[in-house]
Structures are given as C-alpha cells and as structure tokens.
Length: 229
Length: 61
Image (cartoon, rainbow over all chains, first blue to last red; front, side, top):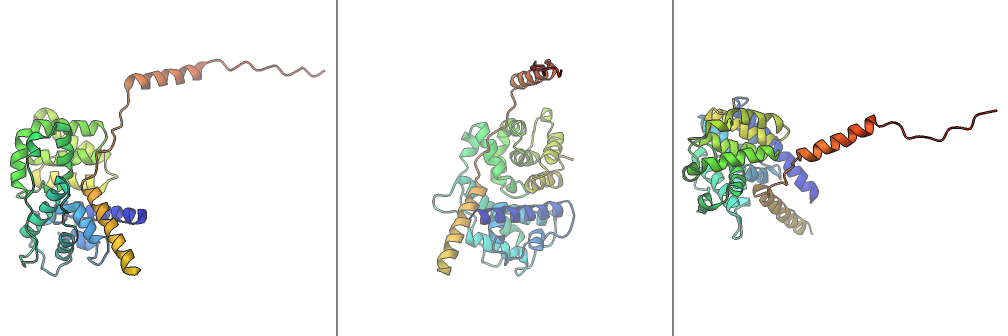
C-alpha cells in the first residue's frame, strides 16, 4: 500500500509540473492528459487531488476540449470515482465542488457531469486565522478567475488574517501552505502593501521549488493575477 | 481473490486521496536564536580549547 501512495504522489507531482508549465505558456492546455493517459490507474486519483487546477490552463482562453479528449475523460472519471462521502471534511467537499464547477465551466456539457455540491461556508467567518490560512491553502486550486466567487467574497474581509497566515507559513517553512495562501491573496483585493506579497511569492517559489505543487500555485498567482513576478 | 484485491486497493487509494486533499498541517520547524547562539558558543569553546593532556611516552633508553 505504501507503494501505491508513493506512486500516487509521483503522478501528482508530474501532473502538477505539467499544469505549471501550461500556465507559463509551455505546451497546450491539455497538460494533464499530455502527461497522464486516462488509463493510468492513478490518473483519476491524481486529478481528484489536484482538483480544479487540472483544468486551470483552459481559464487562459483556450478552446474547450472535446468530450472524448483525455482531460475530459480523466476529470469525469475522477468525479465519478472519488465523490466526498457522508463523513467527508469540508475541505474535501469544497475541493470536489471546485473540480465539478471547473468541469461545468471548461468541459463540453454532455449531461454526464455531477452537480456542484452545497458546501458549508460558515468557517470562513469563524475559523481562527491559523486554521483559516491552512484551510484556504488546501483550497488553492479554487483561486482561479471566475471560480468559487462566493468563497472569494467571503474571504475578502479576512485578508489581514490570511496575510498573517502567509507570514506564519513562510516562517514555518511550510512552502505548500505559503504558496496556497499567497495564491488566494493574489486573487483578493486590499492586500496590505506591507506584506510584500510579490517578493514573498518569489521567495516561496524559490525555496519550495522542489515541490511541483508549490511551483503550480506560484505560476497561477503570476499568470491569473499578475502577482509574484 | 483478484476482485477482492482490487477492491482493497481502490479503498486504500480513496483513503490516500482524502488524506492528500485534507492533509494535516505539518509540524513547524523553529530555530530558537538563544539556543543556536549557545550551541555555537559551546562549539567555539571546544575548538579553541587546549588539547587534553596525554600521558607522556616513556623515554627510550
């Protein structure tokens, strides 16, 4: 089983590298299927973990893939294979909802896509800032223009708390959390100038370069929101 | 047997997916400046300390 976990992490890293490259203009938007064939037994699981990010390159204005394209197949398989269970965490429901929303927005409508589940949003107002930053970083894939607009609106009043969380994650050398929170801050308005978000994102991208998911979040902040350049 | 094995693998993969989607926060790594300074001082003292006296070899006669 440990072999499965290692193989899955490796597939996720490969797919994340492909998406980051596509966001920087390398190759086409079908980054995931260009690296992972839908027949790869780990492809649906990797797509579920990366969430909406697998379709993020299509937010750059590329034409949508056909229903038979590898990206569309992988996303449909992930949505069918890994729905959040009855006892799933809020993060899991939000992550699944983000993938479902991205699929509805970027894939051809063929009736085979599941609905976007209702996810609780009370935590955006009640979580202490440390917990909020961690949770928001886990949902970094939703920081794409036009996706999860309701979540973005609810997070906007907590920009100061997320800024504290960004600094805390950097000081803890938790590069994945720092990159995820930084990506959300790049999307939100009224981020304090004193935070130094642009240089902070560059710093996180360099120090966390060993993790392709860190690189992906920094690439998304740069390409979608023009921060961290 | 094969089907059972596949089901077990799928269940394990589903658990792994959940743990990656909602992973706990890793423990932070902090460096206490005073502790680091103390350790550096101790290392410096060790380096500049005179060598431990050794018993002299008996002179050959």
